[in-house]
Image 1 (spheres, helix red, strand yellow):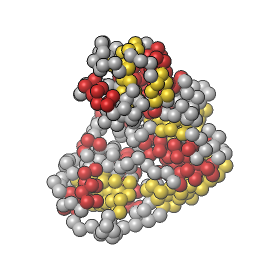
Image 2: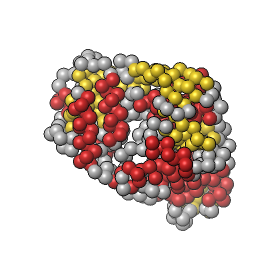
Image 3: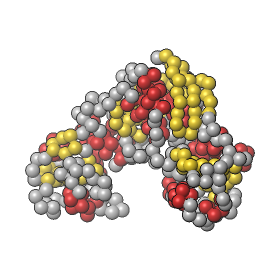
Image 4: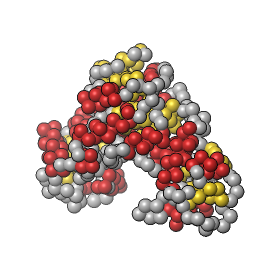
Length: 434
């Protein structure tokens, strides 16, 4: 979103230093600054102020600072008390200047994939912007708002949760008019006291919707469906039950879903290029959003047919040997593990293997990992653990070697919480490294 530095400073109570320039979007990472942006240094483990010169050299035309006095020559600066708070305030100011419909998406499982699918469905007919990757926290979401084109008609923002109040704060900035809740599962339970705490934290999105807005809720998840009582907004449900209903679901050899949807706005056929029956649920949420916005369902389903997901989400990689690797290494919790294992065994193969790492931030890690191990055993999936013995099998120091020779008919799922970094296993398999 384009604005002048003087407007930004006035909008957030900052002080303009230097020339009044126009900037287009913002970044808090000096390595990815684009020419013409505002650089916002965040003080965390490293002080972003140390990288202002690098950002300016990369093309930033202005920067924020919480340090008084010019340290960067005659370059334009906006002085503020706290750059992290000012970033949120600036995004809120920009949101007030936008006429876009804002779609907030949250849930324990599938929020990034659902965000991608909602954006694809809406982009079939409307100028649509969405957050990159998983920019879903108090730094990523405001950057998404600020980077949205001024003429965007739909802005899709993912909202993450690691504790109470976080989604509420994000809603204060983004002011969603449509709120999508995918699932309530065992994710970040350590931080909120169990699954009921997860439901309470996710409900903050629904509670923040205006009376004129719409809550899009998963009818197949009782905790999500119950959130309808937390809002005066309209409610549209989706799932195998609900207002937007999945019918005649079929999976191909790579577990890619083809199905019909019956909705208040008519019926449509959907065919996805991503794997997993659970992706049909995410696509139904996207159809519900599209219908709520008045987008033609045939156009929306056409957008879904070409939708690709953010990296490391059920990403299919075919090896030269003919084996298939399912890269779902971005994150994991017991609920998403169950969905990924179900998708794995739905793929036609002679051997199904799951390379699994630790799932973090669980209130009962032992039980969570044991449940996944039992499900894998019941499904006939061979488990190869990396970096943890919580699955009840001895972890492997060299998972690629432990897999042995892979060939046609072998399918390998790679999944763990982000901290495990199991994308390295995918890279090694693709590169043929042992």
